[in-house]
Length: 100
Image (tube, rainbow, N blue to C red; front, side, top):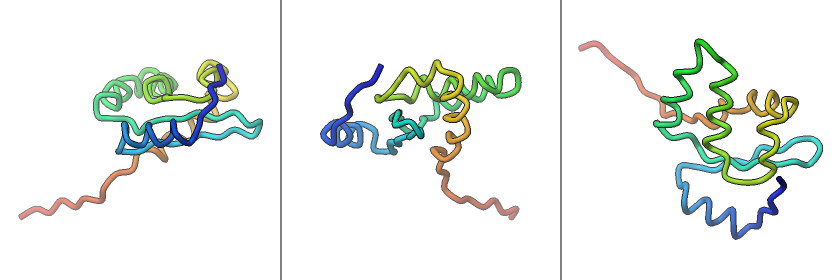
């Protein structure tokens, strides 16, 4: 279902999800808004990775969607495209481990 997203809504999401929100845009104008996955979501999604790789993407999309054209989650042509973009939400800090 298409949900009209306003700048006020985006600002409210930014306040609610300070770790980050993202807009996934498709060539036909559909848009999906997502929050950055938290540790709990990633933990659950990672359990799917070996046995159901698409389940990993589906878990992240379903748990992190906050608005927009939510029907894209259930349409395979959009779902496969969205799945290829998810890693961009996983910003991590650079760390280095040294043996002492």
